Amino acid sequence: MINLYENADHKVIYGDVFDALDSYVPDGSVDLIFADPPYNIGKNFGHIEDKWPCIEAYVGWCKKWISLCIQKLTPRGSIYLMTSTQAMPYIDTHIRSLIHVMSRIVWHYDSSGVQAKKKFGSLYEPILFCVMDKKNYTFNYDDIAIEAKTGAKRKLIDYRKAVPSEYSAIKNPGNVWYFPRVRYRMHEYEDHPTQKPESLLNRIILASSNPGDVVMDPFAGTFTTCAVAAYLGRRSIGIDLNADYVDIGLRRVLGYSSVNGRPLEPVSKNTQRVNGNGIKNYYSEELIV
Ligand SMILES: C[S@@+](CC[C@H](N)C(=O)[O-])C[C@H]1O[C@@H](n2cnc3c(N)ncnc32)[C@H](O)[C@@H]1O
Figure 1 (cartoon, rainbow, N blue to C red):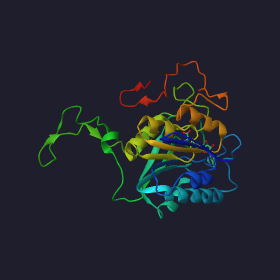
Figure 2: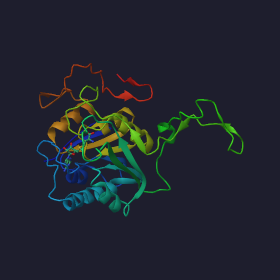
Figure 3: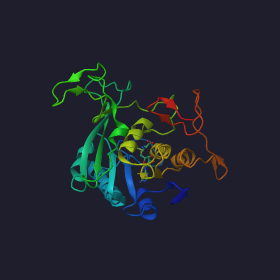
Figure 4: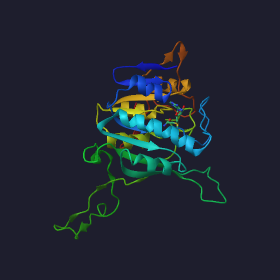
Protein backbone atom coordinates (compact mmCIF):
# COMPACT_ATOMS: atom_id res chain seq x y z
CA MET A 1 0.00 0.00 0.00
CA ILE A 2 1.39 3.39 -0.97
CA ASN A 3 -0.27 6.80 -1.01
CA LEU A 4 0.94 10.21 -2.14
CA TYR A 5 -0.46 13.49 -0.83
CA GLU A 6 1.03 16.65 -2.28
CA ASN A 7 0.83 20.32 -3.10
CA ALA A 8 3.11 22.35 -5.39
CA ASP A 9 6.09 22.22 -3.01
CA HIS A 10 5.64 19.29 -0.64
CA LYS A 11 5.06 15.56 -0.87
CA VAL A 12 3.82 13.45 2.08
CA ILE A 13 4.12 9.76 1.24
CA TYR A 14 2.58 6.86 3.13
CA GLY A 15 4.49 3.68 2.33
CA ASP A 16 7.65 1.66 2.65
CA VAL A 17 10.84 3.61 1.98
CA PHE A 18 11.86 1.43 -0.99
CA ASP A 19 8.47 1.61 -2.75
CA ALA A 20 8.15 5.34 -2.10
CA LEU A 21 11.62 6.17 -3.41
CA ASP A 22 11.08 3.99 -6.49
CA SER A 23 7.62 5.37 -7.24
CA TYR A 24 7.81 9.07 -6.46
CA VAL A 25 11.41 10.30 -6.27
CA PRO A 26 13.37 10.61 -9.53
CA ASP A 27 17.11 9.85 -9.43
CA GLY A 28 19.33 12.94 -9.03
CA SER A 29 16.46 15.16 -7.85
CA VAL A 30 17.05 15.72 -4.10
CA ASP A 31 19.42 18.36 -2.70
CA LEU A 32 19.46 17.29 0.94
CA ILE A 33 18.47 14.10 2.77
CA PHE A 34 18.05 13.76 6.52
CA ALA A 35 17.75 10.04 7.30
CA ASP A 36 16.82 8.98 10.83
CA PRO A 37 15.81 5.32 10.44
CA PRO A 38 14.69 2.88 13.11
CA TYR A 39 17.78 2.20 15.26
CA ASN A 40 17.28 -1.56 15.87
CA ILE A 41 16.73 -0.89 19.58
CA GLY A 42 13.13 -2.04 19.97
CA LYS A 43 11.27 1.31 19.94
CA ASN A 44 7.52 1.15 19.45
CA PHE A 45 6.57 2.58 16.03
CA GLY A 46 3.13 0.99 16.09
CA HIS A 47 3.04 -2.14 13.94
CA ILE A 48 6.58 -1.49 12.61
CA GLU A 49 9.35 -3.63 14.12
CA ASP A 50 12.43 -1.77 15.38
CA LYS A 51 14.36 -5.00 15.99
CA TRP A 52 16.20 -7.06 13.43
CA PRO A 53 17.35 -10.66 14.17
CA CYS A 54 21.02 -9.56 14.33
CA ILE A 55 23.19 -6.51 13.67
CA GLU A 56 24.22 -7.91 10.26
CA ALA A 57 20.57 -8.04 9.16
CA TYR A 58 20.00 -4.45 10.32
CA VAL A 59 23.14 -3.15 8.63
CA GLY A 60 22.22 -5.07 5.46
CA TRP A 61 18.82 -3.32 5.38
CA CYS A 62 20.49 0.07 5.99
CA LYS A 63 22.96 -0.48 3.17
CA LYS A 64 20.09 -0.99 0.72
CA TRP A 65 18.20 2.21 1.51
CA ILE A 66 21.44 4.19 1.82
CA SER A 67 22.38 3.21 -1.76
CA LEU A 68 18.93 4.14 -3.02
CA CYS A 69 19.01 7.48 -1.19
CA ILE A 70 22.42 8.34 -2.64
CA GLN A 71 21.01 7.60 -6.10
CA LYS A 72 18.33 10.26 -5.47
CA LEU A 73 20.83 13.04 -4.63
CA THR A 74 21.81 15.80 -7.06
CA PRO A 75 25.54 15.97 -7.95
CA ARG A 76 25.93 18.74 -5.29
CA GLY A 77 23.71 16.97 -2.77
CA SER A 78 24.28 16.09 0.88
CA ILE A 79 22.98 13.44 3.26
CA TYR A 80 22.88 13.54 7.04
CA LEU A 81 22.45 10.12 8.55
CA MET A 82 21.66 9.03 12.08
CA THR A 83 21.60 5.65 13.77
CA SER A 84 22.38 4.20 17.18
CA THR A 85 25.83 4.54 18.72
CA GLN A 86 26.13 0.73 18.43
CA ALA A 87 25.34 0.59 14.69
CA MET A 88 27.07 3.76 13.52
CA PRO A 89 30.58 2.22 13.24
CA TYR A 90 29.23 -0.32 10.71
CA ILE A 91 27.45 2.38 8.71
CA ASP A 92 30.42 4.73 8.83
CA THR A 93 32.89 2.19 7.47
CA HIS A 94 30.43 1.24 4.71
CA ILE A 95 29.33 4.71 3.60
CA ARG A 96 32.81 6.12 3.15
CA SER A 97 33.26 3.84 0.13
CA LEU A 98 30.17 5.45 -1.51
CA ILE A 99 30.26 9.16 -0.61
CA HIS A 100 32.49 11.70 1.17
CA VAL A 101 32.09 11.91 4.94
CA MET A 102 32.65 15.58 5.82
CA SER A 103 31.79 15.64 9.52
CA ARG A 104 31.05 13.22 12.31
CA ILE A 105 28.63 15.14 14.51
CA VAL A 106 27.66 14.39 18.09
CA TRP A 107 24.18 15.54 19.08
CA HIS A 108 24.46 15.87 22.83
CA TYR A 109 21.48 16.28 25.15
CA ASP A 110 20.78 16.04 28.81
CA SER A 111 18.56 13.30 30.14
CA SER A 112 17.44 12.86 33.69
CA GLY A 113 16.30 9.37 32.65
CA VAL A 114 19.86 8.09 32.28
CA GLN A 115 20.40 6.35 35.59
CA ALA A 116 23.16 3.87 34.63
CA LYS A 117 25.08 2.73 37.70
CA LYS A 118 27.50 0.24 36.09
CA LYS A 119 28.61 2.19 33.00
CA PHE A 120 28.53 5.73 31.62
CA GLY A 121 24.99 6.52 30.46
CA SER A 122 24.44 7.53 26.83
CA LEU A 123 23.84 11.25 26.35
CA TYR A 124 24.43 11.62 22.63
CA GLU A 125 23.47 10.38 19.18
CA PRO A 126 25.89 10.32 16.25
CA ILE A 127 25.18 12.03 12.92
CA LEU A 128 27.21 11.63 9.72
CA PHE A 129 27.32 14.55 7.30
CA CYS A 130 28.26 13.34 3.79
CA VAL A 131 28.40 14.99 0.37
CA MET A 132 28.43 13.69 -3.20
CA ASP A 133 31.23 16.01 -4.35
CA LYS A 134 33.59 17.41 -1.75
CA LYS A 135 34.71 20.18 -4.13
CA ASN A 136 31.20 21.36 -4.93
CA TYR A 137 28.48 21.24 -2.29
CA THR A 138 26.26 23.61 -0.34
CA PHE A 139 27.49 24.82 3.04
CA ASN A 140 26.02 28.13 4.21
CA TYR A 141 28.46 29.07 6.94
CA ASP A 142 26.95 32.53 7.49
CA ASP A 143 23.51 31.06 8.15
CA ILE A 144 24.63 28.71 10.91
CA ALA A 145 27.52 30.61 12.50
CA ILE A 146 27.04 31.17 16.22
CA GLU A 147 28.23 33.85 18.58
CA ALA A 148 31.90 33.55 19.63
CA LYS A 149 31.86 34.13 23.35
CA THR A 150 35.59 34.66 23.80
CA GLY A 151 37.90 37.48 22.61
CA ALA A 152 35.33 39.36 20.54
CA LYS A 153 33.04 39.93 23.54
CA ARG A 154 35.87 41.58 25.44
CA LYS A 155 36.94 43.52 22.32
CA LEU A 156 40.40 41.94 22.47
CA ILE A 157 42.89 42.31 19.63
CA ASP A 158 44.47 39.21 18.08
CA TYR A 159 48.15 40.12 17.77
CA ARG A 160 49.05 36.77 16.17
CA LYS A 161 47.60 37.99 12.86
CA ALA A 162 49.82 39.73 10.24
CA VAL A 163 47.64 42.80 10.71
CA PRO A 164 46.44 42.72 14.34
CA SER A 165 42.64 42.84 14.38
CA GLU A 166 39.65 42.16 16.61
CA TYR A 167 38.60 38.55 17.22
CA SER A 168 35.72 37.35 15.05
CA ALA A 169 32.33 37.78 16.72
CA ILE A 170 30.98 34.60 15.12
CA LYS A 171 32.26 31.07 14.80
CA ASN A 172 31.48 27.67 13.31
CA PRO A 173 29.29 25.66 15.73
CA GLY A 174 31.73 22.74 15.47
CA ASN A 175 30.73 19.09 15.54
CA VAL A 176 29.36 18.75 19.07
CA TRP A 177 25.84 20.17 19.16
CA TYR A 178 23.75 20.68 22.25
CA PHE A 179 20.01 20.78 21.60
CA PRO A 180 17.44 19.67 24.19
CA ARG A 181 15.38 16.61 23.33
CA VAL A 182 11.70 17.12 22.56
CA ARG A 183 9.66 16.81 25.73
CA TYR A 184 5.92 16.59 26.29
CA ARG A 185 5.48 20.17 27.42
CA MET A 186 7.37 21.68 24.47
CA HIS A 187 5.31 23.47 21.83
CA GLU A 188 6.66 21.23 19.07
CA TYR A 189 5.87 17.89 20.76
CA GLU A 190 4.02 15.25 18.71
CA ASP A 191 2.97 11.74 19.70
CA HIS A 192 6.06 9.83 18.50
CA PRO A 193 8.76 8.00 20.51
CA THR A 194 11.85 9.41 18.77
CA GLN A 195 10.94 12.92 17.60
CA LYS A 196 13.99 15.01 16.69
CA PRO A 197 14.05 18.69 17.69
CA GLU A 198 13.28 21.47 15.23
CA SER A 199 16.47 23.22 16.35
CA LEU A 200 18.58 20.29 15.06
CA LEU A 201 16.83 20.27 11.68
CA ASN A 202 16.98 24.03 11.47
CA ARG A 203 20.78 23.95 11.59
CA ILE A 204 21.09 21.08 9.10
CA ILE A 205 18.67 22.57 6.56
CA LEU A 206 20.14 26.06 6.78
CA ALA A 207 23.69 24.73 6.39
CA SER A 208 23.14 22.31 3.54
CA SER A 209 20.33 23.64 1.36
CA ASN A 210 19.10 26.86 -0.22
CA PRO A 211 15.58 28.28 -0.60
CA GLY A 212 13.72 26.30 -3.27
CA ASP A 213 15.90 23.18 -2.83
CA VAL A 214 14.32 19.76 -2.26
CA VAL A 215 14.83 18.35 1.25
CA MET A 216 13.87 14.71 1.80
CA ASP A 217 13.29 12.65 4.95
CA PRO A 218 12.82 8.95 4.10
CA PHE A 219 11.81 8.08 7.72
CA ALA A 220 9.82 11.21 8.48
CA GLY A 221 8.09 10.22 11.75
CA THR A 222 6.64 13.53 12.94
CA PHE A 223 7.62 15.18 9.63
CA THR A 224 9.67 17.72 11.56
CA THR A 225 12.26 17.81 8.76
CA CYS A 226 9.57 18.70 6.22
CA ALA A 227 7.85 21.24 8.50
CA VAL A 228 11.14 23.05 9.16
CA ALA A 229 12.04 22.84 5.45
CA ALA A 230 8.70 24.45 4.58
CA TYR A 231 9.22 27.19 7.14
CA LEU A 232 12.66 27.90 5.64
CA GLY A 233 11.29 28.13 2.07
CA ARG A 234 12.54 24.75 0.86
CA ARG A 235 10.49 22.07 -0.89
CA SER A 236 10.14 18.73 0.85
CA ILE A 237 9.47 15.01 0.55
CA GLY A 238 8.62 12.97 3.65
CA ILE A 239 7.99 9.21 3.80
CA ASP A 240 6.68 7.04 6.63
CA LEU A 241 5.17 3.59 6.91
CA ASN A 242 2.92 4.38 9.88
CA ALA A 243 -0.43 5.95 8.90
CA ASP A 244 -0.70 7.85 12.21
CA TYR A 245 2.62 9.57 11.55
CA VAL A 246 1.57 10.37 7.99
CA ASP A 247 -1.45 12.13 9.51
CA ILE A 248 0.98 14.32 11.47
CA GLY A 249 2.70 15.16 8.17
CA LEU A 250 -0.58 16.01 6.47
CA ARG A 251 -1.35 18.46 9.27
CA ARG A 252 2.11 19.97 9.76
CA VAL A 253 3.33 20.11 6.17
CA LEU A 254 0.25 20.26 3.93
CA GLY A 255 -1.94 22.09 6.44
CA TYR A 256 -4.81 19.56 6.33
CA SER A 257 -7.32 19.92 9.13
CA SER A 258 -8.95 16.58 8.31
CA VAL A 259 -8.49 13.55 6.07
CA ASN A 260 -11.32 11.26 4.93
CA GLY A 261 -13.59 13.05 7.41
CA ARG A 262 -11.18 12.40 10.33
CA PRO A 263 -10.06 15.56 12.11
CA LEU A 264 -6.27 15.99 12.36
CA GLU A 265 -5.44 17.70 15.59
CA PRO A 266 -2.20 18.28 17.47
CA VAL A 267 -1.69 16.54 20.81
CA SER A 268 -3.73 18.46 23.33
CA LYS A 269 -1.58 19.81 26.15
CA ASN A 270 -2.14 22.22 28.93
CA THR A 271 0.60 24.46 27.51
CA GLN A 272 -0.44 27.00 24.91
CA ARG A 273 0.25 25.85 21.36
CA VAL A 274 0.85 28.74 18.98
CA ASN A 275 -1.08 29.19 15.76
CA GLY A 276 0.35 28.20 12.39
CA ASN A 277 3.03 25.56 12.36
CA GLY A 278 4.50 26.68 15.68
CA ILE A 279 8.09 26.58 14.45
CA LYS A 280 10.55 28.55 16.47
CA ASN A 281 12.85 31.21 15.08
CA TYR A 282 16.13 30.10 16.65
CA TYR A 283 17.75 33.49 16.22
CA SER A 284 15.10 35.63 17.88
CA GLU A 285 14.00 32.83 20.26
CA GLU A 286 10.42 33.67 19.36
CA LEU A 287 7.67 31.42 18.13
CA ILE A 288 6.54 32.03 14.58
CA VAL A 289 2.77 32.37 14.34
C1 LIG B 1 13.62 7.18 14.23
S1 LIG B 1 12.01 7.42 13.62
C2 LIG B 1 12.14 8.97 12.77
C3 LIG B 1 11.79 10.14 13.64
C4 LIG B 1 11.79 11.46 12.90
N1 LIG B 1 13.13 11.85 12.54
C5 LIG B 1 11.17 12.55 13.75
O1 LIG B 1 11.84 13.54 14.08
O2 LIG B 1 10.00 12.44 14.10
C6 LIG B 1 11.92 6.27 12.31
C7 LIG B 1 10.62 6.30 11.52
O3 LIG B 1 10.75 5.39 10.43
C8 LIG B 1 9.47 4.84 10.15
N2 LIG B 1 9.72 3.60 9.39
C9 LIG B 1 10.14 2.40 9.86
N3 LIG B 1 10.32 1.52 8.88
C10 LIG B 1 10.03 2.19 7.72
C11 LIG B 1 10.04 1.81 6.36
N4 LIG B 1 10.39 0.58 5.97
N5 LIG B 1 9.69 2.74 5.44
C12 LIG B 1 9.32 4.00 5.84
N6 LIG B 1 9.29 4.40 7.12
C13 LIG B 1 9.64 3.51 8.05
C14 LIG B 1 8.83 4.66 11.53
O4 LIG B 1 7.43 4.63 11.45
C15 LIG B 1 9.39 5.87 12.30
O5 LIG B 1 8.44 6.92 12.32
